[in-house]
Image 1 (spheres, rainbow, N blue to C red):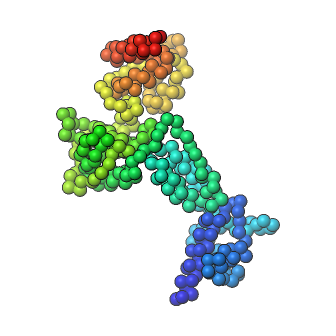
Image 2: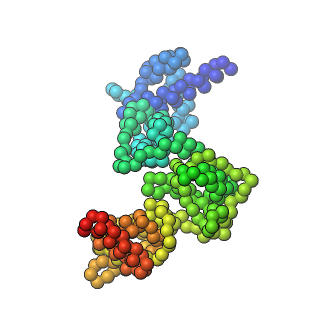
Image 3: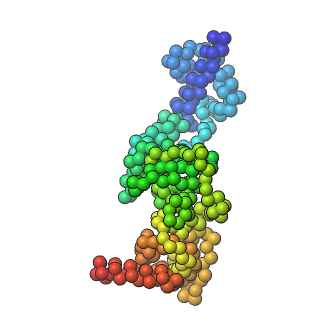
Length: 320
């Protein structure tokens, strides 16, 4: 029995050596493997390592051998390739809703999925302009609780940054503009309906096991991509079917913003127009103004009037 336990320990130690100390550019010979095992207090015969490597291969570990000078064994396949780990690290670095200290901890765990030679390449800094990171240490626990409530079909309660407590029926989580949002149904305001909340501004999230989610009839027809497309920077506002007339060079930009399925109607001068639902808000009007005349709202009249008023105010402020 003692011999079997030692063999299990030896195999586990070998796996960890291969995972942390080998890759295609860094290989270990059998004498080197034996030396590393002995350093961990696991004496072994060199010949037995060949048998151990065969056993690991049978267990699914892709351990390859490079013969000749500078050769040796290395772990050729991992759950994540180095390029994939770099992508994940960049994503974690870019998420402003993850506190800085938690970012470092998550990247440290990702580094454990590579050799320590490759892990050095994961110490990357992605600069996100003008985006201070969240100071909410509960963010990951809040996300976990929200997923639990969504999967179980239960309501949640939480305290929001506006100082109010809320109880809502969570539907989906969405990532937009670098922030994480909860899309939910609430029925205690003057008008029940769909609302969204920044997850990093939520605290004390509790799953209410005795309260099933409400608003199921509305949820059946809810389309998250359509909801995100018509909200600019997740700001609400009255919904209109807005017709936009755009310069020819903005075709790809409009398809990226409103979806590849958007029907663009060409005009004789090369420009094009399309109609799409939009929740008209300050960010939407500012987005239109940002194109400096290359995007024009042609309908409806109410939105044109709001845009004209904004343009006059900007002219008064900037003297243009």
